[in-house]
Amino acid sequence: MSSLSLYDTLTRTTSPFVPLKKGEVGIYLCGATVQAPPHIGHVRSGVNFDILRRWLTKSGYNVTFIRNVTDIDDKILHKAVHEKAPWWAVAMKYERAFSDAYAALNVQPPTYEPRATGHITQMIELMTLLIEKGAAYAPGNGDVYLEVRKLKSYLTLSRQQVDDLLPAADADETYKKDPRDFALWKAAKPGDPSWPTPWGAGRPGWHLECSAMAHAYLGEAFDIHGGGLDLIFPHHENEIAQSEAAGYAFSKRWMHNAWVTASGEKMSKSLGNSLQVVELLKSVRGIELRWYLGSAHYRSMLEFSHEALAESATAFRRIEGFLIRSTEILGAAPTPVISQGFTDAMNDDLAVPTALAGISEALRLGNSAITSGDKKGIKASADEIRGALEILGCDPFDPVFSTSGGEDLTSALDGVIQLALAQRTAARDRKDFAASDQIRDGLAALGIVIEDTAQGPRWSISQISEK
RNA sequence: GGUCGGAUGGCCGAGAGGCGAGGCAAGGGACUGCAAAUCCCUCUACACGGGUUCAAAUCCCGUUCCGACCUCCA
Image (cartoon, rainbow, N blue to C red; front, side, top):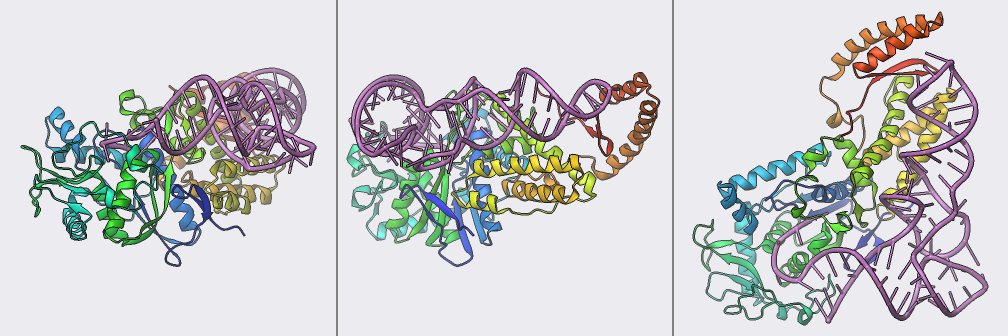
């Protein structure tokens, strides 16, 4: 029996996962800044860490999963001006869009999903502590800064030296002791939302909120902190700086997902709307998009193309088709079973691609078992495949993926189609293939696909058409 | 300037000293009245140049190209 090993960005190595508290895992994942609709890069992070969470849960851990919502920042304020709407309306609109995208991809809701603006009190407490300890200072302009040169281990996650950093273009050295000092708190500008503090009214800096919320929900030390690669610096470095300066042990392990790239380049908001989740869901189902995003290793760049996505969806439908056929033959949905091969792969830093190779093997064996009528073999393969799909969040039997209409409609439809199939079978028996093909073509025109199997004809509703 | 990744067959994507993952696409075959589905077979690749080694896609040195971060980023 293998045990779980995970990569740690801090040490740049894979090491055995040992929780701080037996049987418990605390995870903090940096969520979205809700200032635009989600594109697939955003949801890849959600999918990757959802797989981690499901695997930890399946491994017997009680997982507390925190994913924050940054609902106040410069971009949201700019967007509010642009959209001629209050900043909070903009934030809520895009928070909903993210929630919808996560739901469409079967990303489980976090245990708690804190918003930055709901935790100003905790942020003020943290700043007070940091100032008391001499790590932060309020120079009187309403800003509060963290003094990075006082920290002994600043930039260890990204392995940089303070003096190597390019000075920020917008650094205001009037008040900062060092241009690299970063803002915990930003003084209010006229017209901007603000909250009162002992140092003046203002709003939180981006980094402070995550430290404050992680502390509020997971305590001074927790197991895993996650996010996209681009958050390593400055965001995660600054979180570490704030938290350690406050005396917290903070995260024991750091995990970062790689990007979805387009033509080799990191996906960015300038690429337009085509790779937004809502757009892609017009050509593939949520379960298929999830399969695609989850199929590459989380630390590998995933080169997006519409062709690759379509191929991935085809591959998934093949697996799904087997599970549906096996269910028809066995008269019951498969029971999820986790195979040893799947366990070993997932325990090796979530080696999903290796696990997928195992699924392909089980699929081949299962299809052969259908051909030979080996019900025991069918069940063994179907159980194993469903078990794996469940962890990957792509279980076709999961109610979240069920198409509207439901059982009643399907069974009524089945009765009608069975009548037509009986006519067709009769025609085939008397070798009247013109008549039998006419029936098949007629059903096909209605979106009903007929297949002749060893167990007799079966029908299914054809998948949504490709664009 | 600093830090960090990457380059694998037509395409996507694993692997990290010996045994050429897997998928998609393509071609051939089996099955079938035909189709679909399914199964079998074929297509045997690691950017380039050196080196280490009995053995290198994998380790070392160098080169080229692509990309990311350096205070808005999943």
